[in-house]
Length: 561
Image (cartoon, rainbow, N blue to C red; front, side, top):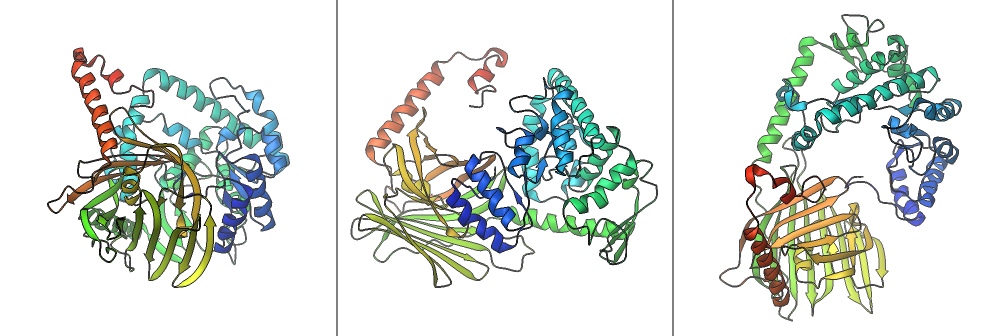
């Protein structure tokens, strides 16, 4: 689902990784699609033993009744009420009856996320308030949302709009039926999904509930007392009473007549601190100034020191890459390739993750050293410096096993071994691409992936060349794609995990007058042959008349473009 989700492959992973979350004192768990039956049941078992609820979409293979019997505590999206294998185009109202009855009878809440559906029918490019709203949002969101515009615009044709309106109509009827059936509804929006503006989107969600036929007083009840009860925080929030948290919204109109009155705000009281309309404007201007400072900092190049070279090593290739997502730089890395006196090769990287300009801590830094001898990975060291703390991972191939040790601030926190010889230890650093560029193409090869806290996971990847000579790697969580210059510098790369895509671009490289670290000759010859063949096909293709075949050549809408 995301790059930061815990990936649970078996019950053993559930046991180890959920304990970390429990130790962190989380409030509840959110699960996504893709968990096996035994893993999902283990999550429910351990969470309930800790007194925690588990929310998420309804598992696709279960009916609502079966999911409730299995123990899921809450649901996201009205999609959860669709019978397995049935979509919104064909579903009819009677198909929801059993699910509604089961939710009500078992007191299972649901977050309808209705506005997220209605939003798909809106042309965001035509908004006249986007600039002002974007001034308040993190640059990572604005870059992501702008990139989504092109895809959204392509779907706003007459046919898809008509179909979307029919679906939204069915969902409005279902929302009213949920209320009439006594189901506990919890307002939510799914922000920061594209164009779901924080705060404002909640008011839009509530207004849609009223338009669907739920009376305004009932909508307000769901948004206050009801939401607090659903989340188990009604002792502090949701009602105006002695002992409750003093967070109040003072309005110029009565929202029990029309929910839209929530927009007519004259005063805000947050935990007892009072803000009039001028004070609210001041707060927004403070946020905008902070966001501008972040944007300005993002556009400044980051200078990163070269990684340290093992004793006696001679650097033959050096360079800098920037990693971006939706046009927003996330980190910068200085990499080196060094030849060692014993004939081995050291692949080195120093990664700096810049903090926001207003942060009071030093930026995170990771240093990666992977040494290859005789074409095989011999040892790895990864050191992560974060807010004055040091995490360290060390890996060594010895006695026919990959021995691993992790430590925190010099104290050992785990020693393990693995009986397969990994080709690379993946940290998200460009060192991974450098090592793989000099490795053999393979259908199935072992790797070690390091997660948060440098927690190792053994996995298998597949690597091949595409038709134009780029490396394509199918990973256990997504894919990698990258290509090299003649001197062996990684020119461009793409990493996809779930719906998140990260790209890196080479900013500079230096070979110090030598050839650098070119890929193996056999591989270079194959890459050149594929690129030449692709160029020949491109040059012999007939020109498009008025762009007639451009869509076909660019991949059309088959997902391969």
